[in-house]
Structure formats: C-alpha cells, structure tokens
Length: 123
Image (cartoon, rainbow, N blue to C red; front, side, top):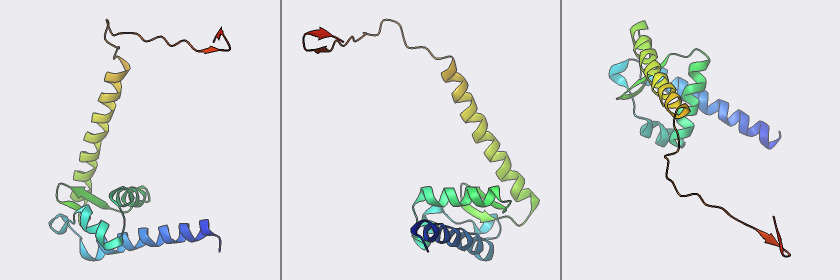
C-alpha cells in the first residue's frame, strides 16, 4: 500500500471514529463536547477536527455545534439552530468581502519607488 493510500485510509478512519464517538457519546445539545477534548482524544489539532466535522456535514451527517461545542443532533431543531448559526457566519464573511471590494488605500500614503541597476543599466 502506498504512503498516500495509507494516509487516506487513516484520515477516513479518524473521520469515522469522530462521527461514531459523537453519535454514541455526545447526542444532543446538553452533551456537547469542546473541540479541545476531541483534539486530545483523537490526537489531532483544531484545524483537523474542523476539517473532519466539515467533511462529515457535507456528507449529511447531523453534527451540530454551538458555544458549548460539537454534538450529534437528536432533533431537527438541533440541526436548524446550527444551520442558522452557520448562515450568520456566512453573512458576516460576505459583508467583510463586500466592504473590502469598496475599500481604497487612504490618500496621502507615502509611495515607495525602487530602482534596480544591473551593470549600470536601470531595470
């Protein structure tokens, strides 16, 4: 088995482990678990946990989150609350992007000009 295949299998194993752990131990908002606990349990960093959660959600796995952490949905209301929160995040990012589209560099900023001379010629 190639190194890439082994890495892919390990990543899939971790993803399945995270899914099963949340489903079996953290079903419902009242049993939410912080990312830091998942990081320690699965020997992953926060970014990897977020990536796994995102992949599972894209596959339709009902993993929810709030200020208390991640949890497996018990009700449609759990899912709806998480979707609403994600919509707020998307709106915030979109608003930031729109603001930057209209941003301008302030006038009066010093300009820097760099001249490079190679063998007496200016480039």
